[in-house]
Image (tube, rainbow, N blue to C red; front, side):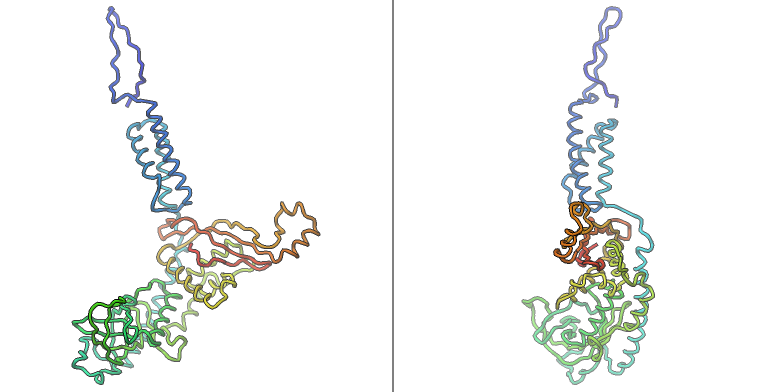
Length: 447
């Protein structure tokens, strides 16, 4: 569109006739004052949007205060004044801010996801060992295993006919089918029209193998998740009347069902676990005694240098989590955080959370340069203070201020398998006392 300035003078023509140049129509006339106001308004929203984007530090968020206003106003300007240089500059700024609002991206290096391939190989190894032992275990009880379906009817089948017989139950959901009954804690399997099995999960026969599965998930394969479909081999022990409705105010009536005491659990394709009264925690999973030796061969980091920097320690901490090296993970954490009756459970709880996040949310993190400061004691490295102090004064302060404690803040940026940054940077606090090395203080912080 050709822009014509207002106020053109009439042009005299020869022969004494006077004519005027044709005036531009209203649609082609540009009101420069109005355009400037519109550019100024759009520029305000673009600046606010740019500020919001900058505060995210490469992260993405769900709600933006100024984003929609900035996009709408700049779009209207671009459509109305497509050739104006000021509008074009504003358009380019908005494009840049919009891309940044979608989160930062980076190249995913093969070593970032190597732990996933190792985990898959280890999972297959344990699954194969488990399948072989599961088959042997079933063979040893073959004579006592009865068909799980149809479920015997307690109205016509005596408990004496099925007591101590084994049943193999598939697709048992935990914790979905869990309920508390009058006679114990159970998982239900079945329905009113077919009958019920009530799998006893309140005793060691369940707790031992189930804890073994949790150890497998914690140290080998975190892809299992919290909701699991088990194959359960168990022994029928009695018949009870229970209402499997998990709600406190149970709806419906109780149903007769066979109580099944588990002796072995299997997560198909993952792990097989067995009850063993003499074993630690009353259970084990097949291959458990071989795992530590197998994993030793593929740990990329096995110890922490005494002179480790805060940034390097965070890399080691992350690697310990990704490679499921629990001992190294523990060695990264401030010893003071591991003292107390609840401390071990807290450490393991957050280990499980880290495992889940590196399985489902992100695969790697990078770390910014640490910000270090002295939070206790006299800082001998403070050049400004030392300028005013002599040797005797520094000696007095070193003696009276107590042990020097340094704190480091290291920001992490997490990336998913596509190389996209997940969220904003997260700070991690590290501590160093005296001449000791650095330790992770807030081990619970996400990456």
